Length: 505
Image (tube, rainbow, N blue to C red; front, side, top):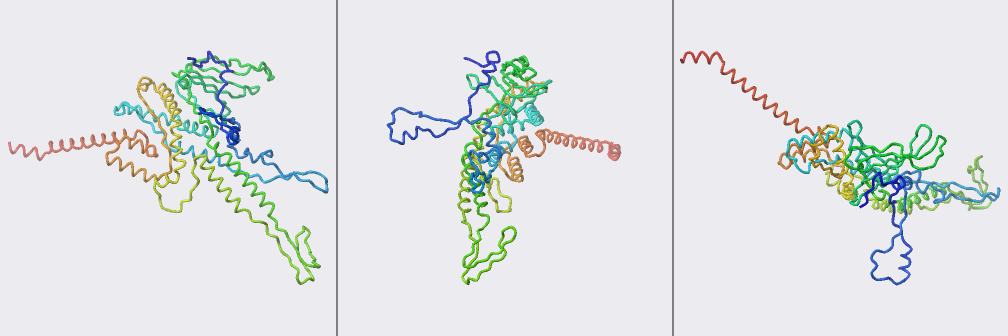
């Protein structure tokens, strides 16, 4: 079976990947509805797609680049001036919303709000293994691996994919997140089992004279860097040449954790959001058109005195039946309001997010109530956690190897099966969490070390609290034993007791 490597993959082959796509309505649906005969045995059907790019995802994420801001999609008003005999353009009101960022923030916080749950799959009862796990968690926090998980989730939510690349520099592990907002174009390649065995990253950097395109490539053994062949004037063949020869990256496999979400979080809701922007802009344009009321005067021999800026100051008339007043504009805000409310509700549902809910009760509500209020996003977070699990497994595996090299315990960590899982976060009462831990510990449902680890996730202490508790208990027992020994020694050498012993003799 063919396996992509640096030796058999040229830069041109590396820079090939499956595009992102979205299903669109097909013209074949019209043919079926027109009464054309269907053929028996067809089970797949025909699908047609649109192919959004990284740039499309970025435009959807930025409120300044939404469709409503484009005069081609929402044109300005073009009129004709009879006096000047010229056409003129009047700018229309353009209003948009940052709901794509809100959707991405909500979905990301649900997955990264809590610390990644790290535990041993086997051998957890051994004190040596527990010490190694505690040290692993300390290294996990020290090297900001929670930030790596956050980057993986956040950039996957806003531009559909992200990669975490690991390296070892001077015997210490490190990582870097790579995504299109950071200027990277990602090219993953897989072996026959679906595991990443080669990864490419294209980017531009300043070499001191000009901006040059580079291509970094990792496989299961080596790392190599290419660049576009250009001279000092920016001209050249345009071919890729080796900028840094292949060197070993010192990892047992391709040191990349990659996740492809297929689409952004806001992608399914963008059509609804575009219509919402359109409705809101039309409402603003409508209010602007009818902001000034029309003044009218009915009757014979009406004389109107106006100020220098045209405002009516005095109206006089000899007609007793004369009448003046203002024409009230048609009230259309109610229909706009209903339309926008329905669009927003449908957009939240399409993005699997929860609309903000006003909590009228001032008392501390239970976690179950909050969970029910956030059930839409919470249910989706349960599914998202499963989707990100393979990439999280790679992060844990690659960090475990790099950290074992740093602390020089490679053989000890190689025999440990450490698992990391994402538990969706939901806002809850901290007092309730602490009480639950205390109840579970008192009932014997969880050991002291597990309670200490959970308390550390809530911000109380560190994962080594259990060892500190044991040390304190040991110190107390030693102190009590010494105090008892000193008491016995005093009683044994008491002069009164010695004199009584002599008299009895």
